[in-house]
Image 1 (cartoon, rainbow, N blue to C red):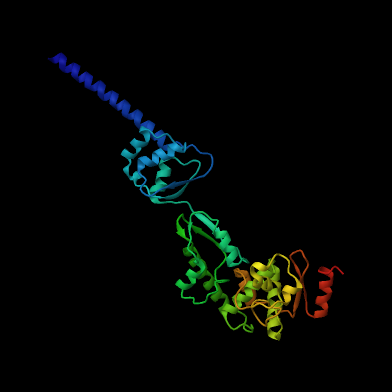
Image 2 (cartoon, rainbow, N blue to C red):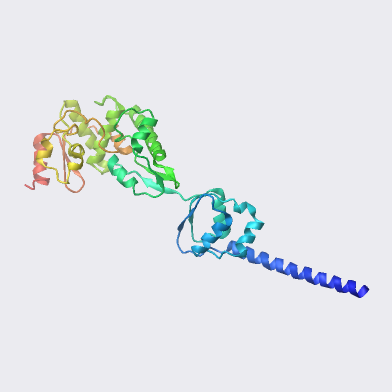
Amino acid sequence: MKKWLLFTAATLLALLTLLSALGLWGYQQLQQFSKTPLALDAPQEFQVAPGTSFHHLGRALQQQGLLQYDWHWKLLGKLQPSLTAIRSGVYEITPGDTPVSLLQKLVTGDEKRFSLTLVEGKTINEWRRYLQQLPHLTHTTQPFLQVLQQQGDLSAAPEGKFFPDTYQYRAGTALSTILEQSYRKMQQELQQVWQARAADLPLDSAYALLTLASIIEKETAKPEERQLIAAVFVNRLRKGMRLQTDPTVIYGMGDDFTGNLTRKDLLTTTPFNTYRIAGLPPTPIAAPGREALLAAAHPAQVKYLYFVSRNDGSHVFSNTLAEHNRAVNRYQRKK
């Protein structure tokens, strides 16, 4: 009896030792699995569909060659159940991510951020073509007009009312949500600039300043010229002269503009052709940035009434028509 008890005890001790060794080995294997980087060399987009379970996720990762779906994955879920409460969405897996770090992203909903840039000087139509190419955005039929309606802006003209900037979004975000941010930012920027404008501007509203800023934005990309361009237009408005700016003609032509502005185009009356109409066009012709808004609000203190391109992005400014004609002959007509 005593020998049997000793044998039994020894057997149990051996089994316990074996189980302990197996448990230690399993723990070490699991720790190694949890900390081993996934098999990828570059960032990779990974989508988790609604209703995806922890085990379905493991199989999907194996199908993409990122890890081996076996007992390590299953045991990880058993020992750390908090890591199994994954959320759907589009995520980015990066080199160095481990099974645990990836699961932590999925549990906290740390989805991939996408960005879009609304470039200054572009029109709504140009933005629309760009936005349609971006991934993971939810579109509506008329998102710009939708935002105007939601904000109580009864104008049917969205041009110029959205601030050009870079915006972040997650997969599935409605484009109108981003445009709402852009609209509010433009209203905020415009009101700040309007309140601090020069006292003697020949502009009767913040919207007029926005329209002028859009023309300035289209006329030059050189920061040092914006206030000079603004001065020319402001001086012309004070004297009752027509603005005679080509970008307004091009905007008024719409799809009829083929890239070459002709004399006939300049003589064709449209609501935007400032060779034919007095004052500002009825709406902005593009999206001005903050610097163009500031230039419109604070034009340079000069007497210039004319400018002409040097064909290198810069302009020659003149006080008189005679000076301007000489500059045109030199830089445009090559005389």
